[in-house]
Length: 174
Image 1: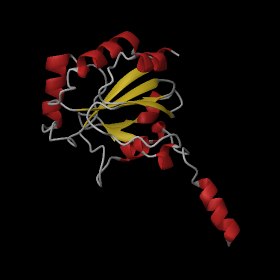
Image 2: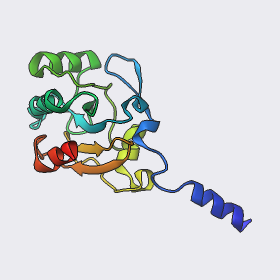
Image 3: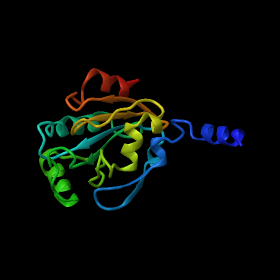
C-alpha cells in the first residue's frame, strides 16, 4: 500500500505541467492552445485599462515590435481583480488596446488572476506546487511572468517593473 502511495506522489511532482499544457480563450472568444507557442519565449502580463500602470501597454507593444516573431511574444490577460480597474467587456478591452496603444500582441479574454476563481493558467503561474519553480501570487495589474521556449516558468517581474527593464531584456535576448 505504501509503495502505491509513493508512486502516486512521485507522479505528481511539481513542474510536471508546463505553460504549453494549457488552453485559453482569446479576446475574440476563440480557443488558443498555448502549445502553439513551443519554441518561443513568452512574457505573460495581467493587464487593466484603468490602472496607473496601463501606459506599460506602450512599451509592451514596443517589445513585441522589436522582438516578436518566431522566438518571442507578449501575451496579455485582462483581469478585474484589483480595484475594478478592468471593468469592460472583452470587446471594450480590445477596442481600448488597439485604438489607444496599437496592441498587436495576443490578448486573451478577461480572467481572474487570483482568488477562488483563479484561471488554471494563473494557478500554475503563481504556485510553486504547480510550476515547480516559485510562489508568485499576483500583487497588482501588470505583473509579468517569463516563460522559456519549453514552457517553463523562469522568472517574474513585479507590476512596477518596466517592460524594458534589464531583467526582461536579458530574458528575451539570452
